[in-house]
Length: 297
Ligand SMILES: C[S@@+](CC[C@H](N)C(=O)[O-])C[C@H]1O[C@@H](n2cnc3c(N)ncnc32)[C@H](O)[C@@H]1O
Image 1 (cartoon, rainbow, N blue to C red):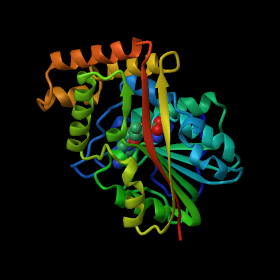
Image 2: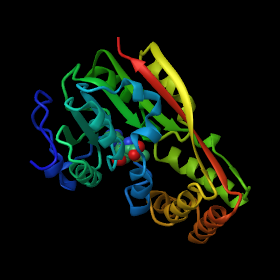
Image 3: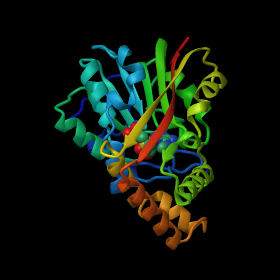
Image 4: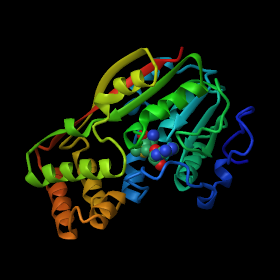
């Protein structure tokens, strides 16, 4: 099997990434939830740029050789790869509901020469693994997309060993701040938050992570926050360019048009506004994130 090892004891019937096909992933979530972004090229470019340093700084001190880790909603796997490198020979099971993106993640792991990662198509609410399987369960930018993040945290607690940690980080869209101001970017934010909620998620998730953990019965929770900052000459061109594309070709664009929330002309205007921002010599944007490290009793 290229690029991965089967993790003993994680249950029969799981699909290895090398064998995952779109058809193998059935309807696993309830019907009220849909992953809004999809996995178009611009979305994957944005997600693939993430690293364990940019996205898991709050939990880096926990990573040590020998840990068994679950990465829920691994996407294209760039964070997974960083985690796996640090915990080897510990084992990492990276799961996502989307079969296509698992194949991309498998390639990333293969290219990194990792042999301690397995990828499997699974749903956050019904992980096909026994109780107490992992020392660490990690979910980056996943809970915000779930209709029932508390149920997902309960499921993560089930598969995490007593004394193990659940780590989650999510952005908080209502907290985004940028300069220069542009009414079309305000409209973009309003539109995104409306569509995310219509898809069953909660775009302002960062501020809610602690509350969700408490609702899941987790009491020993360390909450923190951190930001991503993009500015002229330091990421603004990249980030603005990607959103200029994402607002025209991604699940967000499809939903905006399909639901009548925006017209194609309006999306084009928003796209141009992102490009104008990206090219502005004073462009600056900060994206706040909530983070939790919850110790499982
Ligand atoms: C924003 S991406 C984050 C990917 C990766 N963790 C990162 O930060 O780069 C969210 C991922 O969660 C996955 N996802 C959404 N709902 C899910 C569910 N119910 N069960 C498993 N994965 C899910 C999506 O397919 C997507 O790949």
